[in-house]
Amino acid sequence: MARTTVDIDEKLLERAFAVSDERTKKALIEASLREYVRTRARERLREMLGNFELELTYEELMKLREME
Image (tube, rainbow, N blue to C red):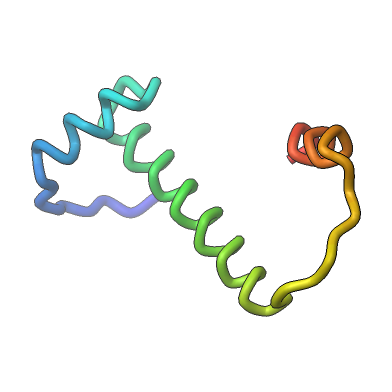
């Protein structure tokens, strides 16, 4: 595990804590990084796949999301 010193906007940090269940800065930053990586990976996948028709019912889509 790398030890890193960074300057973080205190107001942004407070806002992140307000919408998070995390209790420590370390946990909050790690959760934020996981979310960032997951979001960027989805965006890249969408760019690679492009647009296509997906014939799923709402219920089927919700089941797939639960499995995620």
